[in-house]
Image 1 (cartoon, helix red, strand yellow):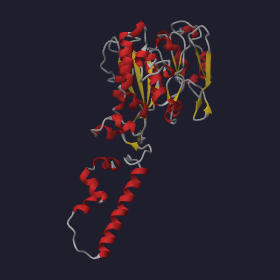
Image 2 (cartoon, helix red, strand yellow):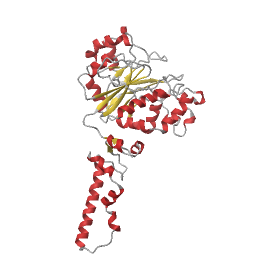
Image 3 (cartoon, one colour):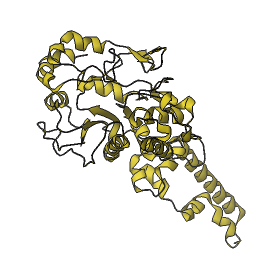
Amino acid sequence: MKTAKFWRLSMGDMEILLGSPVLHRPQMKKPMWIVVLVSFIILFLTCAYLYRMQNTTSCNMFYSKPCIIDISVLAVSHIPVSVYIERGITLDMPQNPKIAFMFLTPGSLPFEKLWDNFFQGHEGKFSVYVHASKAKPVHVSRYFVNRDIRSDQLVWGKMSIVEAERRLLANALQDPNNQHFVLLSDSCVPLYNFNYIFDYLMYTDKSFVDSFRDPGPVGNGRYSEHMLPEVEIKDFRTGAQWFSLKRQHAVKVMADHLYYSKFQAQCESCVDGKNCILDEHYLPTFFTIVDPNGIAKWSVTYVDRSEQKRHPKSYRTQDITYELLKNIKSIDESVHVTSDEKKEVQRWTCFWNGFRKPCYLFARKFSPETEESLLKLFSNYSSS
């Protein structure tokens, strides 16, 4: 591509472009008008080059202004991804952007038929990735065949869960057309049709990462001062693991070693005897530190925690009604309750590009037995 070739310029090419070798060449007697003309041409070309680097999709090495670069440049460059990120690089939107649907599941997905219904007719606008932690999935939908990622055994609440999420991201990032990355569980179902969800995720500059400050035992109570100086308690956050990331944020996650290693050291060894649930704290804290304004602080995946038990409510066949699903879709406030004695209720309105919108695109936890009921209702409840 045209924009990438500027990064392949050698130092010699840069010197020639900028005209500095002229200063070291033997002086030649030439008419003054030729010298002036050549100098003017060199100056003009240099200014045009720098202007182009500042205002097109090429990366600007001379200004602090954020720039844009195609992800293919990262693939062939020897410069670490973290260096590009430090320069404020975003990623160029391809002609045919896609959403990567990344499923984290123990084995087979009980709602493949429902997802097959959801995906039909939208080929070329999505990618599917399946990470199974226990048994190799048996697929019933063509969209899921040969989309499995080899994985290690996972233990919920441990480092292996976040490592699995990173494996999903690493595989999905290899497709340059994937521009949004959604992590889903085996109990997740879509609440809207494909077009609504595609537009909701693709046409916003935000990632959706559940993140709130909980002073209680399952929030700040899991923080350790061993995470200093990189992670301060004022930045420590809690949230559900089911994220939805823009591509630039997915790249940042994969490039991170500093904060990831801090959480790894803390949570694997249970420093201070504290049970640090990594998947509930790493990403909420990471984005609070590196890009707090780049995320909407709620997950687009709904779960019912109204019973205030350790595990959220699980839906059974008798629970599945059109009214239930429409009620979930109508929620436009994100609500969290702290785990301390105060049980403080934190709520904020869900804004999408400045407009008040429903918060949730997906919902969990649905029992496998509910699939037939959901299939019967899908065409009705999923219409926006």
